[in-house]
Length: 551
Image 1 (spheres, rainbow, N blue to C red):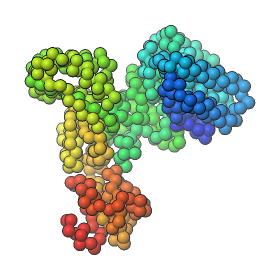
Image 2: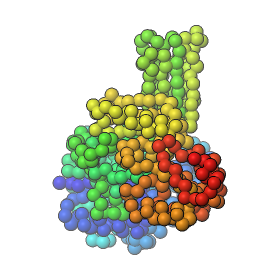
Image 3: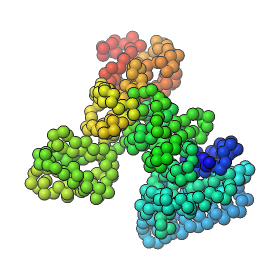
Image 4: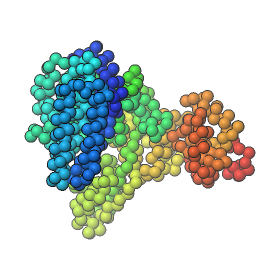
């Protein structure tokens, strides 16, 4: 039975990391044969290719420099892996770079980069990494062969976000995996349309490639190897108290991926869910960590919610007017106009009075969306039955997701209490009919504070935030107590002395807070105290009458 593993860009981002992947596969191939290994482009390469698609049609001299930098990067990896004498690999890499340059040159001469040319250029990252990694596996004694996704996957022609036609691709796929190799290294992210044009599957599409292969090959599991040890309750870069989830359901994973959780590409889930194939998120750099399993039942963690995530940057469009109330078909027309303009709607909320409808869209789509709505409702706007569309930028969507929320009262109340205590204003609210999701729209500048507040409410309800003034003998002793208490300590969110101050809503490490304070901002006590939200604790470790006067 074929096992499917996918390694992301950071996992194959350097010579050292590719060797690490080789160690993992050496162990895995000794126990399970054959293996299907899907790989991304080397870290950063797809972004460089994207830049190339922008420079070439502008006839920028930087295009050739960037092309040469890409060539050198791959040649350095080949030398670092000791593969410079592999003539077959050298020929393959040379052919791909020749084809890439021809594509760049064509875009340069025509002064344009069509969607088809864009996808062709972007796909070279994976088409280069797969043969290099396969050659390295052969060099360490693993019987391996590369497979190009453009040869085995037939997709639609929706460039930039194509979907694989599994039925049409099945025969090619079955034939490709019959050559008796122990490890097949497959290009992620790329396929080909029925007419043979290279298509890409969306950023993160290598995950989707792995899930589609698992479904077609009836794999027992899909392993997604990345640079984190699973799915967290929140983004650990923003929420210091975020923790790993042992398992979640397919539905929860889809909700989290839609609302910004970047560990897994959303379309990955559907092919696996249809075949009831578990998806396991693992860490290439900590291969012994258990990771997170996504399956039908979930239920590995006894939290009231599964995770808290966010879409950082959205715009809110509001349509309102007395002419909307009680008029059937207004919402249908609104979403029809947006669909015709190819606008993706992130969130929808409607007042019960039917007097207004809000939709959240990407800021880049805001003006196009407003024009589409106002054009569609131009007669009602002219008759003053509907007001012109209102725009709000600089917003974010915070989403609370969890299967355990179903039929459990008080979840939404807990969210709004946590936000209200921090004086965070909510612009719009939406709850999915599945009861898996409560979403709120708020100011982007308050997103970090909101994420920490809501996460604390569900995952650390007893962990109070502490703001401390004074970092001398007494303050230092208090910080040592916090350090000794470990996970049971309050969250140190603010620290100040007579000269400097630090405020970090996520919390800061007590053991290094005094050293970090040296690089803090100049002390402004009014600003420091204004940052302290209700429900926090203020600790005065000074003998200053000025500080005491603030009580």
